[in-house]
Image (cartoon, rainbow, N blue to C red; front, side, top):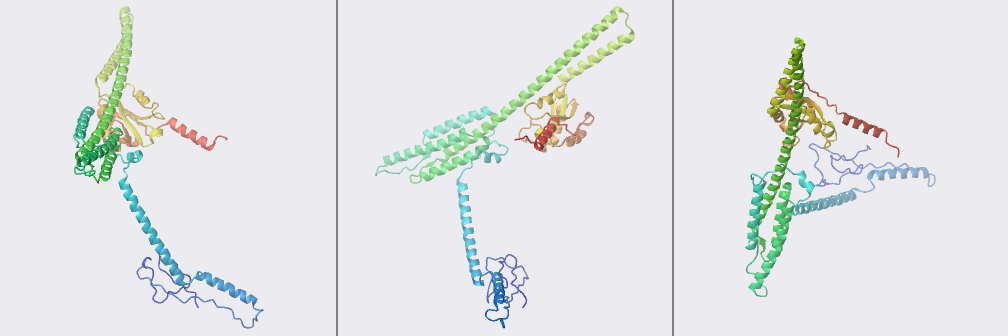
Length: 470
């Protein structure tokens, strides 16, 4: 008889070899349905053919008995050591256990969700990960205006608390049949609840950061819900107007802090601009002093030659040409000093600090723009900046603004626009400069030398290849 077996569809448990389903047998409902058009067939269990015992004798058939025993063991192993009924019962038990575990997991997930709804998220890292661009709830002109408005709100909060319009409760409560004792108890409990609520609100104000506003409002909402639960028997609750006023205080506090930081950043930028202008002014003065000193020297030499009357016409013309050249240089410096829009636009990068696809595009009025680049590469960054381009323009401010506008969607800092870093390669900025700057673009370097960074990386690789002896 051929060796046949039951062929289950994909996803069904595999039965013992040669198993035949009983009459009227149906698959378990939890099993996936068989594919469309699936046909399976069954065959009678394979019964091992036992050796013939004729002529072996009772004692002479020991070898034959050992062969029969081995064949029977193999048959039992092929059938899995148990019948179909036991397999079906075990499968049903496992299925019921799976259903029970799934139900327990669903219940645990529901309880976890309910607990998360009751808990206010206050962890600093989680809040910072969700922070976006701050939007003012109550836009005012400056931090002073916010401070004045906050003073008014705080005064209103005190008035509401003194007038008994902060936390209110039942007016018909009695203690030992006494309505006055009942009102006194309600007032005492209301004061206690008000103190707890104000403590939470004051703590939210004291620890406020603009990105914490929603978390602080949620905490105050939970405080209101808690007071309602604890004071339900005496109908004690926070008055809605009082709660709205305290939420308004939180919003104004967040706005005030954001406006303060915005004004501080503006002041820092203005001071930086003033320092840059002062450095440029001093540089202009030094250059004019040098040129005028040189001009005085040549004028003195020319006067001596003319006084002696022995100078050749060629020497006199040479000195006059030099004086004209110095006069033009002085005029150029004075013109640049007077024209606050003239200067150099620089394109620099710092691979070691920001990677190879970040550039800084700025403008300086210095006579020596590299001095400004060196200042930017001070101790605040680990490596010096590499200069890709220096473009002089009579309207450097306008040129810088056009470059910034073209790369606006690639800004690293999308909030503080005075941070002039952009996600762009030097080659991309070069192509943009060719389109915008035109003839101003005299020289451009696509590859950053980054000597300090490359040497540092090389030194680190040497250390890894040759670690110090323990």
